[in-house]
Amino acid sequence: MKGTDMLETDKPKWPENAMVGYIDIQATGSMKAITASQIQAYNVIIVAFTDPDGTLDAALWATVEPILKNAAPGTLKLLSYGGAGASAAPSPLTAVNLVNTAKTLRLHGIDLDIEDNKITTANYNLFATTLKKLGQ
Image (tube, rainbow, N blue to C red; front, side, top):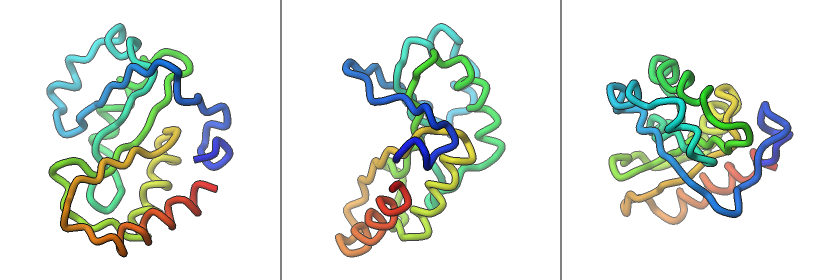
């Protein structure tokens, strides 16, 4: 997504040597154990995973936000959709929700982790086309 589409116009670029960390938002107990020095070791942080409709529960975000505030300057922060447990078929509305959620949470972009083999090419293409248009 272009930086002008997100709330932060100085969006970091993908680093040449990426150290990627996923924050599993469903593991709230584990999140509380993450220290500032641990989170600063990463230059890409992925918040995983949104709800199947592309939104994120406000209570979960309230747990993640303080962790992300400890990220090193220039860290690329992404919102992840999908995962092994996701079984909903993504739609154009899902794409809209993902972009709006990322903007609201001041994240830099979206990571797609589509693993469900029941998703059809047609419905994925419509989702991806909508997502791409929203990111231009």
